[in-house]
Image (tube, rainbow, N blue to C red; front, side, top):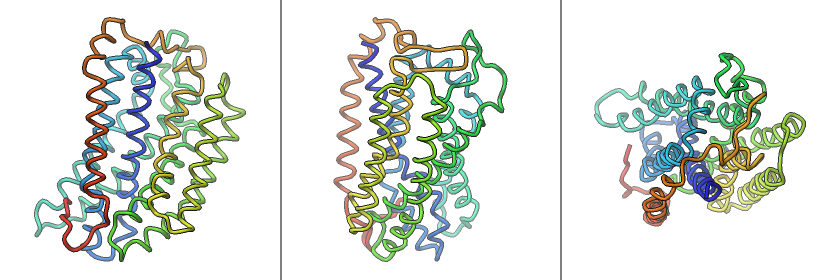
Length: 328
């Protein structure tokens, strides 16, 4: 039963990164489209219909983590407390700036634009550092308590992941704008996607090679995810070269989901590691009675989330034009 719910948690988490990754990518790329207020509003407007719906996946994933794996939640949030705080600060700043930027047509928007770019950058860095630490091991002692070494969270491997996530989300954001932005912005979006492809490939190669020697106890599942990530990158590059922008976006979405998927399966059934501590999926799970309660409402909730996401994309599958409503 715990394994099934771990898969559901993985679905929600990977769905979040596959969708919300281009939210933060568009935010970080906003200065690249600063050729006037109209262009900036079009860039953000391309994201408008999807913005809040994408964030719901994170809310659902965290809710399921609290309900289904409370022991894991306590250890992870305590061990990476600093990164959780910076992540929340980035998310709040980004979300608030997106929604408040265009509330008053006559107001100056420079501070809100800076909040969007800075919030997206902090969020991307924090997610990379967070997942990188989960992969290499959190600073926990033998009892599973925080060791108190905050600087350990900024180890070189985790920093690599932080920088890699910035490039990865920027690539995903550019691929998204190549599909949704107005025709006059498509060329710039494609050029940005091609520019960020090189650092993303470097991240994949270095992180894979470094992780091969740095990580212990990996399984075949981890190898499969790495292969999937390189395959998604290859699809993305070929699609960009052949101007198949929707295929490139799908490739970038799969690629952004792979790091979270790797963290979840690389040592399975062990789901949390530290220098002298480990936790299995069964040890992390809640009581069977709680799983029975979750089974009543979690499946229809996930189904509703998938349907709403599909309907949103179906309704806004075409690029912006002069008649499109600009949400931000």
